[in-house]
Length: 113
Image (cartoon, rainbow, N blue to C red):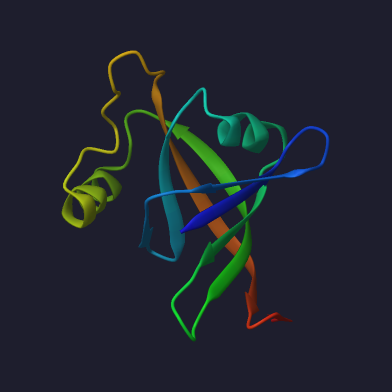
């Protein structure tokens, strides 16, 4: 999946992310020092895009940044899907944060819904 945020100067910042979709929300893990986190803390509006051949999904939403401890069901969902602990920091990296994105608008096949 691709996550698009806005830089301070208004230009887009697009980055690939691992995700889970749980209870109607998109969830992403990140290092707290990442560009996307700085962008989201300044402006929580994002777009997400998932390309699936003939059925691409694009959504616009608002984001909430969570610090540890993360919801156990989300940690379990990442572990099941990817085999890793989304809350575990890597050596030399910043603290982990979890992004919760609530969809406010779907854009399907280039048409606003």
